[in-house]
Length: 297
Image 1: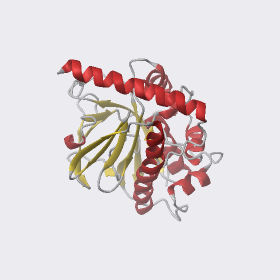
Image 2: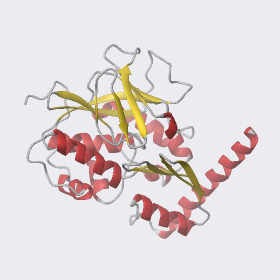
Image 3: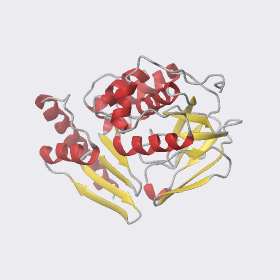
Image 4: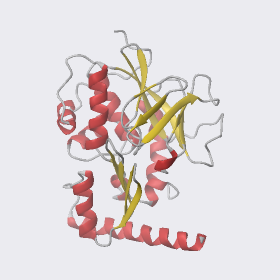
């Protein structure tokens, strides 16, 4: 198979074996669709979407090999890390992968058309004659790859997602999120292939700006076949077919136990002093959030 122009290149220097061990998978005999689906499900279940490096004020980059090394050590990341790593893993295993510029949108931006405020890295994979949307960096969706075709509707567990052409760019796409998950409305992306350097400025902005949601609040999430577990600040959410349940975490010990038990984040690289500072920051953001909610009533 001849890779598409602009396709992601393999990186034999990356810790692919450590990555596969974290996923609980062996290398595929062939880069087929069955293994792609298995890898996507395992990634969503085993490797949490999380922004704790930002909360710890530790600088990271968009280098996929760096993200792969962090994943192999037991951590996760947000979209530039998760999809950066996954794209390189798949390319190294023989898949035909392309990266695209994307924007996750809330209601206020959902119908904006021509402009693209980059805040997301998108992957497409050409496999068995179809182009697939493969994304482990959206936090709560999707659980499995989706065929990239106008009118595609996929029900995964309790949630339904869709695809339609995006009017903002010829050849662009709009991913339509399930409204019951209440996290974002849509994600649009451009058709052109790009390299990882195209995400560097957006990563710097999202990981350092006081206005960034990633700076304002700690978050971790994990998707399974039925739904999603999300901790945002000091509140744990479970979103599935039964609705939304919430639990406020009151002590640092309980919060760190939650990270380990629910999200697999044991944070062996975070010492006691850093944990104390992180909990103080999380608690301050929680109190600010409560005050904002009270003022809005």
